[in-house]
Image (cartoon, rainbow, N blue to C red; front, side, top):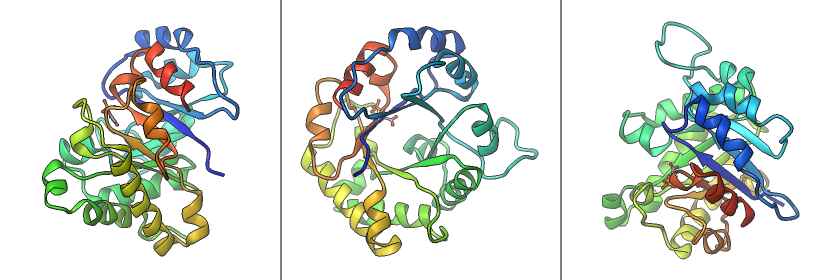
Length: 249
Ligand code: PEP
């Protein structure tokens, strides 16, 4: 059975001091079985998060972006190995802000997935359509193209990864996909993974939904078919609100 995953992407919020303040205030009463909780702070706050999380094995940490090379002249970048050795377990790859604000390509996403897996980080691969693409009836085309590019060339039996379906028009806008829309997109992704990676492997990959998830709508999203968890931006910044979301997991 796939675990429920509740992940928080802090984006460019919470420096080290705010990160240290967050953890003591984040004390969800978790269900049984407990969901997997992941927090992805800015890279500069990762070490503070590692220290503040001590004694909290239920909370894993991640990095929001990696470079595909191990090291080199890439000013401002971080490698998967560096993130892993700092304490990250997950790496977000292909978030829509990386794709649309920083022009990250499908090919770069593929290289980052490969680098993360090669170093032992678990990639959380984000896919999702823009509003124009949805209105043009191209949701499946876009998310299947992004998925295929991200997993292209993965060796058989390669380590696990997670997928996050995040419609671009729902990120940070207050607009949420309906549970039926999320279920349809997740079903498309699961079916495509079965075709390309095999049914057994496809059945193991948790698919998270992301896009304006908050305490008031998380339960109905999690109840939708094929939704194995949520990736939360804005509502993960406040410890109490993220705890309420984790409690629904
Ligand atoms: C995100 O950043 O991945 C996200 C889903 O943001 P928000 O929850 O704020 O829409």
